[in-house]
Image (cartoon, rainbow, N blue to C red; front, side, top):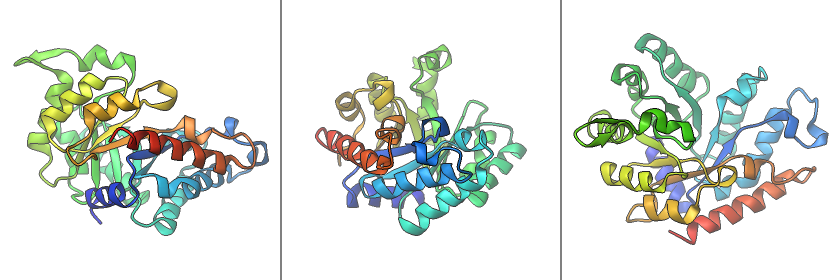
Length: 271
């Protein structure tokens, strides 16, 4: 299934714009999982099973797996999502960005090894570094545009001519030239609602992945006002740590579900 088809179906069928980020830190796991060789997989599958009906997608961050030599558990996690919760898109948060020949290998890694439905990509090396991902026409390619970290302004807010800032140029370039297969999205942080509105203005109904609510303090109401489409969708609003570590004990899945439900409902209140 095309990533965008699955995403739109999830928005509608689950009445949710919530993306649950999977950033597993074993040091924060409940005591009964500490020291287990499969702890990352067990923790993440429990979160997935507890929240799947409340989320429009999941977003595992590859660094949290690779740092613990757990890439095999990442493969198993994505396979679990596809098998147990079919139609739920999985975005591999890798932020890859390299020359074409290397990008080809990263694309194989994301889409063939891990079987992700989409990947985050850094566009700042230009089109040839992005084309290997775009070649997978049914997979999502979600490009960094206006990131949620304060230092993003060091480059993304630079004037590049024509009255545009660099992030605006990226948004327009992706929407007008790179999205031939209709599989592109953009990352725009919830910490910058004015820029969310500007990106929405430049890109029409292109899906936006919005990190920065929850632990980073982004405002849900401002994010929805700035970024929702006329249909009340168009956003994947990510929350990771707040949901993952809502509980400390063996009932951590139940606690994560309750926080995910509260977050989804808070988002829906402003749709």
